[in-house]
Image (cartoon, rainbow over all chains, first blue to last red; front, side, top):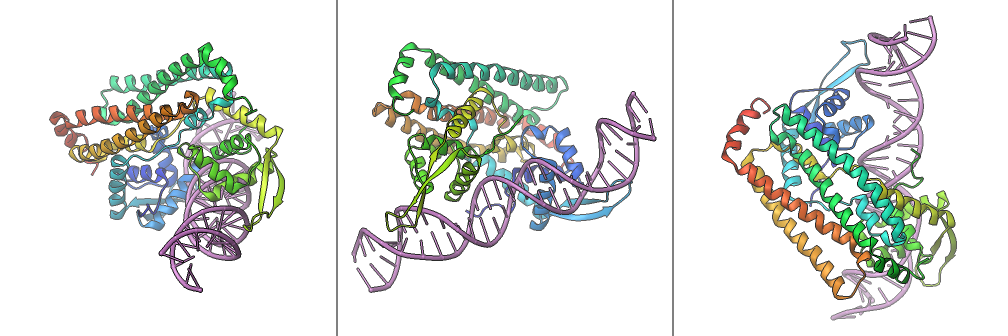
Length: 197
Length: 197
DNA sequence: GGGGTCATGTAATAGGTTACATGATTCT
DNA sequence: AGAATCATGTAACCTATTACATGACCCC
């Protein structure tokens, strides 16, 4: 199972942006933000430079020129190479065809739910619900704004996925609260966790 | 927004295991596996030692003794401290009460879907569907095996969540395939992506 | 009794984030 | 004119993963 020379998902987006033309790292950051990709990857400005260095070393991008046209620091412009285009397609294919085990923080927390007394868990879950509702509203706003601008749906699948995921989690939490609220369970909890401190 | 002294989720599980009694790093790995926690966090043996060192430095665990009872390498046993117990509870509370933006690989890929020609995307998504179905079956097996053993449901919420998430993704993929399969869209794709190479 | 593999740990390396640095432009 | 902010990059530091090391049991 040969793994990617550059594994960081940010690299995928950098390659994708470079498909539209050469750019320097800082500009890539701006583009990613403008295109709303920062909702899909986590990165900092620092990691952009790291990733660009890696891509360069791997031959997926090439240094095109270094110029100081503006009075700003010298900028180095990079362009995607044929190898880079191939990598982008191949990587995308893999990401779509084969699910990777993800490890959401919430699931981790759920697996330790029994540490907390039921009534406290319920309180916390209610707080989460409220925030989840906010996020769902945000997501819906993004989608309807885009719809109003006649953006083609392909450009929105990621946001639809995001909204769907939030809704799923929301339902799960609601049902979970229901179960935790059951007095029968609460009585039982003290038995189950006795001796676990 | 003061962040945790030890941020790695693995630390959370280590603290939780130490609630049941002192242990040495290698044993923690065994315990985590036995308890099926390796479905919820990603770690390697190496990271266990790293995390234990961090927890020690942060004062959440303390060195209890170092012994060579067995002919095996010398082992250092760690115990959770009061600060550690507090940290565990507080961290859990935070994880449950406040959703963190996660960045699933699949969503990243979706946001670049337009790079691939529709018919290829459909093929890839069908492959994903098949694997997703396998995972769902696995998850269901875990759950019914546990049910057969009368495991209390609190110990299974994480697996239920996992199954739910898989099912959600499955539905999403099915619907997405439907939309990509539409010939109207396929014709349009060539227009939309013209000039993007 | 030699080859695997289990039990346990350390060291080297690579990855990514935070912090720092610098000059220009705009704001008040 | 001084303060804040933008544009751009480098360097130091921390984290985490892979690779390496070592001795005992177990199997045939």
